[in-house]
Amino acid sequence: MAQRRLVREVSPFSAGALWTVLRALPPGWASHAMGRLARAVGPRVLRFRNMKENLRAAFPERAEDEVDRLARGVCENIGRVVGELAHLDDIGFGRRAAAVTYAGEEHLAPALDRPAVFVGAHTSNWEVNAFLFGRLPRPVYVVYSTVGHALIDRLILRARTETGCIYVEKAKAVRMVMEAMGKGHCVAMLVDQRVASGLEVDFFGRPTVVTNLPARLAIRFSCPIIPVETQRLASARFLVTCHPPLLADGRLPLDEQARDLTQRMSTVIEEMIRRDPSAWFCAKRRWKKVRVSAAPDRQHGL
Image (cartoon, rainbow, N blue to C red):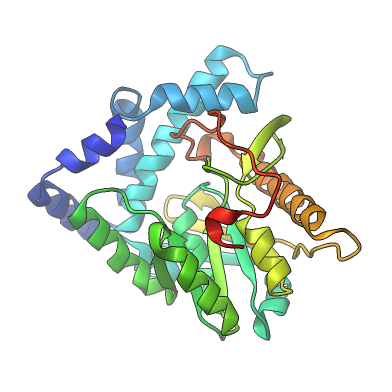
């Protein structure tokens, strides 16, 4: 938990001053500067060991020097995300040489007249995904986690409101997500990180416990899971791609439907990460031993 302790120790003055400086810079400069800084100091202050362990596990064919290079790229990407968060509005609305390009928008069609569950991974700047959701004619509830620092969390949440989405803290999300989908709204969440319980599926060739909440929601509300991917094209310039919807196979028993849908979702998420491993935020140990559930995810009340 050293990274969270480091965040908590940042003074409100320092956090506010950094945010002000980043806002004053052009978006591309802020992204580049923070990326260079994080690449230089990240191996000493971020969870560099965890990053390398995760990358070794996911890419066992990579040599150790390549794993080290990828992990330094992960540090750089984290820094870029910080620099870009201060300009989330500029990025989403194409101001100050920042921009978002969209692809696969035809796959949004199912979400135009019924609920949908959007899923993604912590790759590139995952916060940019939400601008795609903001283009929908119905509310989208985005599940997020705090970073553990009151001022930083407020600054980030204020930046996120520019996307037009409704943000729900992960610890309080279950009831609000269920109510939102019951009203015909959509939800979005990132599903590549370690979870306390779920279903065991194949992820990077390893048995891995993955949240089955998206699958349970999709089955319960008869709606699709729609994977969304963000790729950084240059500093503060992105491509957001909407992938084909994933639907439950109604020919299978309910538990098998959830497992099958969770496996297909995880395969798409793995493909996103494989496209650019250095852009994967993998500071948390992904393959730590966790409880495996073959039954519905009671943790989420489904």
